[in-house]
Amino acid sequence: MKFILLLVLTIVSLAKCDIFSCPSSPVMQSFDASSYVGKWYEIEKLSAGFEDNLKCVFAQYSPINGTHIKVQNNGFNTVTNELDTINGYAFVPNLNTPNHLLVALKVPINGFFIERIGKYDVWATDYVSYSLVYSCQFVPSINRKVENVFILSRTKTLNNSVLEQLKAMLSLKGFDTSRLSVTTQDCDY
Image (cartoon, rainbow, N blue to C red):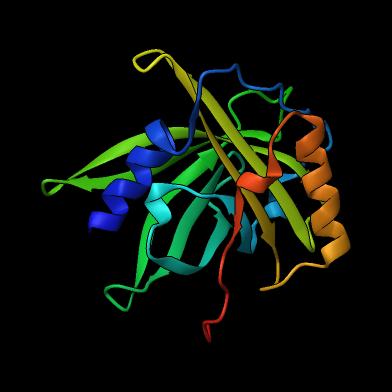
């Protein structure tokens, strides 16, 4: 329960802070959300508090209808020895930028579910092996930007040359890839 609360609060507010502006996200006019659904394993990420004590992190995306995708984020909690899961949905708010999604996650707070919405920009994907996801939002209340980066794979590993190409893409946008951390993927599921 604590994980879920931290996960959403961090995604929406304090994953990683920096005072500089957010880089522009590339537009993939041909992005096809229906080809993006399925299981994605987290390979590397910008370390975020909501994933403390988690390994074997993966997401399962499935179609709800023509405009919305069901989101199920999972990770094995090494403290509780349980699979932590948070559910929600994603949608494309502007068809001119189909790879710029919004994700709404349902967060349990004091027995109630609160919906929190965050950005999910797919910077690169081939749909069958890799995806690079970037999220950046300026938060006026703290006068800073909040960033998340996820390098995902359809399998528990990713070809090193592909990984390096994705990191190069981040570097070209001014992102320091030394801030990324590897996600352990040694679970049997």
